[in-house]
Image 1 (tube, one colour):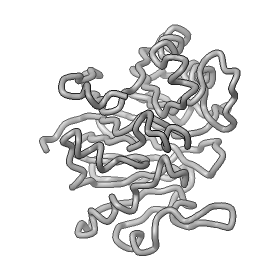
Image 2 (cartoon, rainbow, N blue to C red):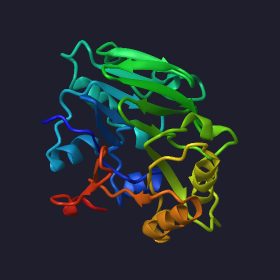
Image 3 (cartoon, rainbow, N blue to C red):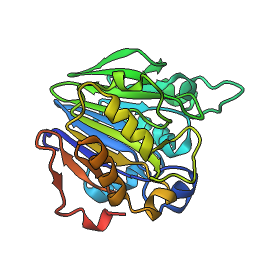
Image 4 (cartoon, rainbow, N blue to C red):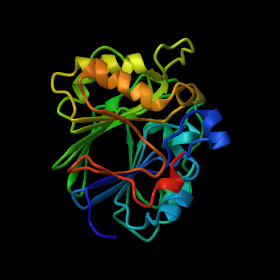
Amino acid sequence: MKDENQIIFLGTGGGRSIMFSQARRTGGIFIELDKTRLLIDPGPGSLTTAKELGLSLRGLDALLVSHIHPDHSTDANAVIDGHADDENFILIAEKHVVNPTKETYPVISRYHQGLCKKYAVGPGEKIKVKNLTITTTPARHSAPAVGFRIAGTKIISYPCDGSYFRGQEKYYDSSDILILNVLAPFPNDKKMAKHMDVEDAIKLINAMKDKPKLVIIQHFSFYMLRADVRKQAKIIEKKTGVKCIPARDGMKLDVDSLGVEKKGLEKFIG
């Protein structure tokens, strides 16, 4: 694989109904930036979708898991297993992912935790992965969770799941790309507790001192799909003044130009 600064969406669905139906895929996000390769939140289908796209997940530098929910973590053990012979492979996971409590549940096996360099994290931690610095950020979700700010020659931010809270914006100022998991449309008559809706996304972006160059919305529920994610992206764009696009399954974004490559991906668009 040649070195590129790119983001590839291995799935743009979110929540148990979408995950179970696979109305949208749930494979997470592949990021390559500054010759450093990351996989974020590999739910069911990350490996098979990558194979269909011709994307090799061998040679990843790190796996990032924001929280315990299966639409974010199901393929994590398999990804780690595939890097068992790489002594430099890193796992960065919200601490309950690797250290379950009575209120949570096991996600990554003890065996697989022993196959990689492990960081069990809460918010506010900085971890160096090759040419990138990854900062964990707070989230307000139904399970303990962290977001990620990935900084190199570009800054890519991913707040993960959770509703907007006052002050959240400060963690993502100066981002080039902001990837938001948006599960409820505008207007929202189906409030999904502890998940971001379109109004939350607008509040977050407008509260930022230095707005991102591009917002990408993804992790869609059936509510969002029925409301037309393209229309929902246009609402965000109109109310924030920031270009906003809805991700598609298999979508590849050039991080430097912010251009979307469509050729060869059409049959993977959900």
